[in-house]
Image 1 (cartoon, rainbow, N blue to C red):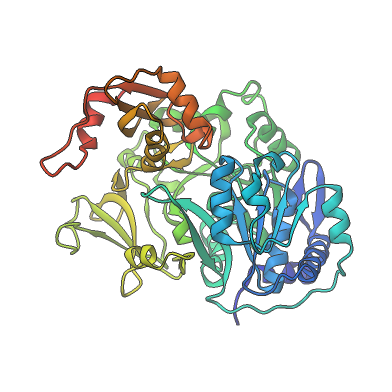
Image 2 (tube, helix red, strand yellow; image 1 turned 180 degrees about the horizontal axis):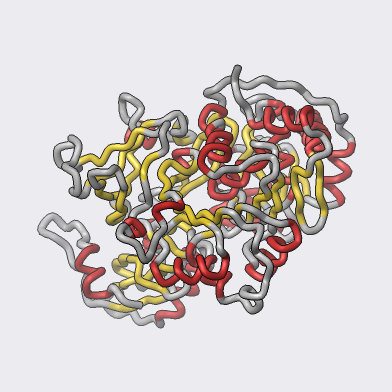
Length: 508
């Protein structure tokens, strides 16, 4: 029997109809209520002409409707496209031009992010504003389940992630890949019907939509936040007796610095998952003391439908004999094959030697939307996915991330690709060449730093160039530091030597 995301709500609405499924800003919906609402939305989408395989785009900060529409789309075989509300209007327009949604649903705050190209996209039949317009539109649909039964390889979610070329790529996540969410919740996170999961990461990320589905998949209660707010997170943990949550280390640090955290009743917490970067000894020690729960590190990516490697709570022992494991992201899940490949020989790298992480699993994406060449370069014959991440593996199978072959910068849990920032800066008439690297940042872990070579006879202030990029890219991608240089280091073939840049410009 094939799994679909709609099966989650169908199953629990039948087995535990009155159990709490979702809470958002003080309002709680049972599984039965969420089932009915998602059926109404599914039927309303069908009236708009949405059919199996069509795309429905959603542009909003976290809202309860995100879950409703995940289930609604699955009930008719449509594909939900989560749009990143942190992007600039031209970026959103480019993604929409690639995805070609039939319907766009947008929050009131995010309406201003739509430019003319987004609104006049060919094939876009309707734009629906969340709030009164959406509520009235949904109410016109009957609450009967359309009953679509999807196939394992059908695409159910389309999440966009930037690539080394700077162009966004739509990751096609299938019913089969997302079915592992149930196993992750039950077998890895220890979730069940009594679990309460606090979800604060953005739902357009796999860290939000993937992890965010885990407790609901096993029949537990999900408490959704519009966005990260540590004071509100503490209040929610106390009020709803939250047992599980996921934060990046930068948010864990901010949580510990929130006034009143040490006096709060956080005794319900069982497991805090973190990802995007390791958690330092000092931060972990304080977090263990204040939160008094288990910690687990997760490594994964959009292309793997979420987490594929974990450092289990038993390996979080900062004062013990195996404290060095905290530098590892853990070991592969039982259903994931993982290899470290020597990039020169394309054979398995010796234990302890750095290579590229390759994985094979039912969790791997179907491919990149409209990009067969990029898919072929990433998913090799035999089903192996090239992650682009460099790491080494010890004799026990623990994986240690070493560097990123793609030069990706992780700032506060957000992935930033230097090429995208470089492309934006290169459009300025005063710039001859530019390179972007990641440098340490006390709050965000890393931040982009741009090294710029100006054209002869041109002068421009650093802040003016930063402002120029902010008009074209999401602010979190923009350099916080920009310096000028006479030239950029290159090898004999003209290839930019970013390693040398990191040595000479590696501080903010």
